[in-house]
Amino acid sequence: MLNENMIEALNKQINEEFFSAYLYLSMSAYFDSIGLKGFANWMMVQYKEEVDHGMKFYNYLLSQGANIKLLPIAETPYKWNSPLNVYEETLKHEQHITKCINDLVDIAEESKDRATFNFLQWYVDEQIEEEENDREIIDKLKLVGDNKSGLFMLDKDLATRTYTPLNTNEEV
Ligand code: OFO
Image 1 (cartoon, rainbow, N blue to C red):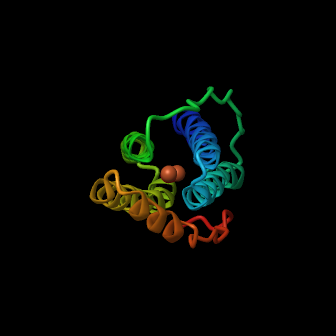
Image 2 (cartoon, rainbow, N blue to C red):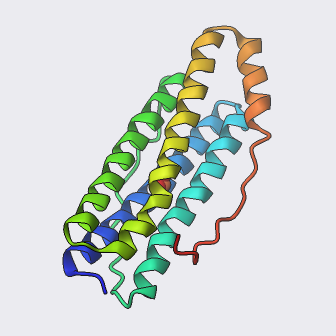
């Protein structure tokens, strides 16, 4: 059984995950609008993964008999200066999500909520990967600089990213 504080915090995290989805969908549209279809694809996959992250919290709350409270999703930015600017903002956003996950782990620990503590470990690992992916793309974009053919190659590379649905009912 989850305590009220934990339930409220997990409901807030559903909102964070759906905001992330919304943000990456907006970034996908931006890339589409400047003709970078591969970058748009990468962000579209990211959008779908974030919906899965939100649904994993949603299913966990339901499995614990807790109430779901869906909060309003904030408006997202829709314009950026460059692909590098988009990925720098993405990394910043993921660092914020990492902090949110760490705060949830703290709440689980403080209330000796072992089930939620274990459940959250998947997100702890996922955040390492998310930040690493963003850093990798930032490094490549810095190397490419103003070189248009380099950007085109990177776009082709990001076009190969595919979406693998997550089993959002699995608790660990
Ligand atoms: Fe981008 O990460 Fe969700 O949790």
